[in-house]
Image (cartoon, rainbow, N blue to C red; front, side, top):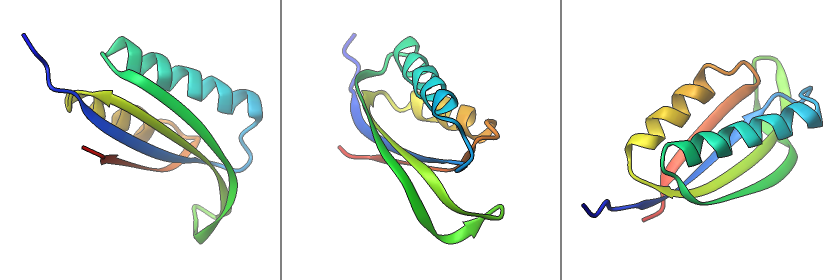
Length: 98
């Protein structure tokens, strides 16, 4: 059966006091979660620390990470639920590119 894959981009913002080790651990966790659930062409880009337009939970800046991948639509809910439950993630946004 042919499964139609869409391209997705998710950007998530980590708390600024997250260590580099925790950041890399989260990136590895989300990459493995994507692979385990059928994600393909996974590309991670660290966007670095940036000032937020408005404060979120008393934080004025955050660490931005961008992940591009291809998958079917069910994977979006899985990864967003995981990010919602992670206390180090301030915000996340997923868009479908195609």
